[in-house]
Image (cartoon, rainbow, N blue to C red; front, side, top):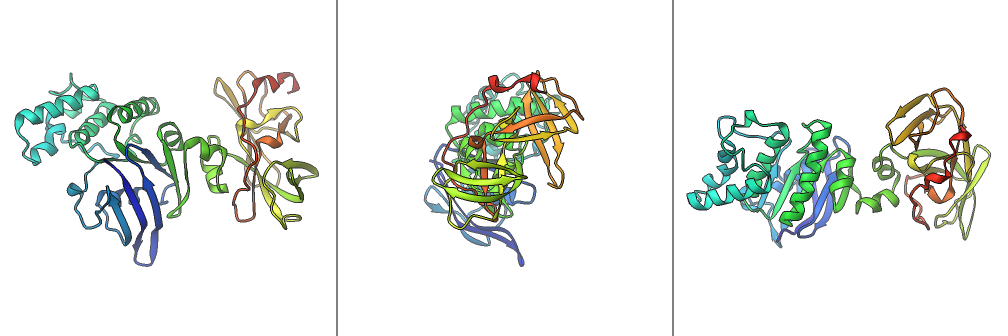
Length: 377
């Protein structure tokens, strides 16, 4: 078993609140990712679960047992840190075996456990080598192996891939996903990289300023962000936000005005919205060339050619933020060339003055590339 319950967990340093009444249920075998910007409290929360930091208030419960006062070794957890924390003078075998030697496990059983973990992690040909002879990814696998042999109820990962280069991070993401399927263990993973969160998690917990901004499956957060923070944090490049004014509501949705153009956004309307300033959101990948429900003729200042996609960045007058469009990679546009871009109402999100999302009536659909017309540029 590996069930975790956080019941109104708080962490303060004097009068400064790092975490504010966190409530969360993690099911047995779930892969949950804590994600958020630097300083949001995600690593602190992980360290509290591990028992490395004390809890100011609230309860941490593992498999029905309150563990606030238990030391890390008695909580049934194993933690993998950002730094590999390997002993350079020990072989890979001895590094993996170290926690078992501390427990004084019989040698025959110890060897069997280490060899089993090494086979899972493809380290069985490296057991006699020292950490200095290994690549960064192999060292991280050794650190994971040291956690596996303890057979914990819950694995905790604190940004384990941040020291690796981009290609190796991608490889290790795949390895960790395979490991989770193989072990069927509960895993809690901390990262500031929303790509890691989207690709590995069963469920994502988005933290902001010590509070949970939203919890849900990756595509749920992508398609139905609860607020403007989650909308801007999940997705790469980030969502575009345009200031609009509500001009009316009806059964079909909320009508808003952007610089003289009106668009009916299919969301559940609220009373008293007319005349209020709202925020219209649209993801860069949902912007298309040519006319649509809302049309913006813009002049890109920067063009990024990524092969499959071309990303155009535009500084909108008076908006304060870039307008970004992810277009087909074959599109022949260049910086300082005026282009007409269109936004469909069905792809839009709408947020109120407090940044809370209106409930959407439709799902965002995948981009149909046939709608792009390179000749329009």
